[in-house]
Image 1 (tube, rainbow, N blue to C red):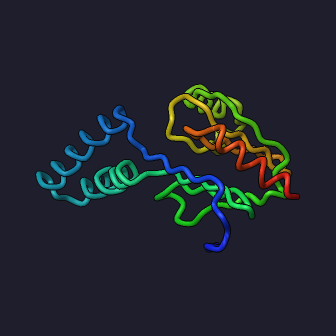
Image 2: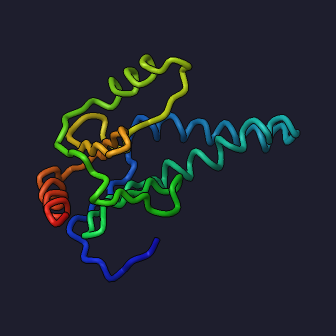
Length: 163
């Protein structure tokens, strides 16, 4: 959904730059490339292709873009989301700044699931910090990590007061 005529009230782009993830992915890439060169059989190709191609692509290009326009909140987790997800202002029930620890949250989400199906309800590249919790009318909630929580809050207040 492209709408370039809307005024952008808030824009933030965060990049995936966790050192500990890089320390895991780079050795896996080296092992994968070594296995492909050394063994070059079908099993090696099938085992290490996702690690040597997909994981580094996600790690080195991963970013979250969050923007607030007068017609809603848009967020995109590139490269997993190619287009923006939109939350219209009329479907926002409540929103507030929330402190979080993403490792604890992931553990809680996993343990609370009955069938152990993991469905993340938030996007952040911060291990801990602040985010904007947006409660939507359909009962779901979305946590969007931000390094500018007050600006994000002001932008959300401006679009929800117009309704």
